[in-house]
Figure 1 (tube, helix red, strand yellow):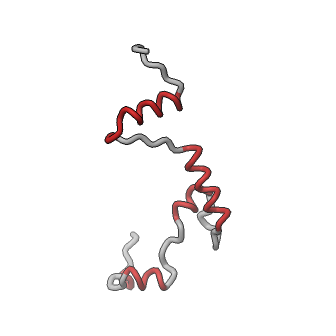
Figure 2 (tube, rainbow, N blue to C red):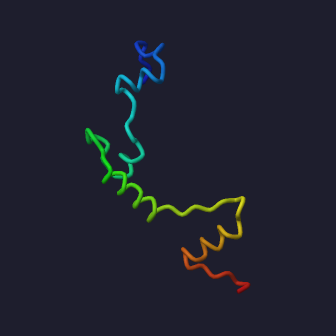
Length: 81
């Protein structure tokens, strides 16, 4: 179980002040540095590069532009072209 009675009444601020919170968990996950005691600027830069290379975003509020981006990225050609 993950419940800890000693932490039941602690505030979020105190939780982090006592160094119990995660430190840049997404950077750690993306760079595979989960147990590294300190992560720095180079880890952040690597995480950003990983996202730049691996993530493709489309917005439903901007469907036409998103579909065009997907077509270009994946090399798709629609039948009506």
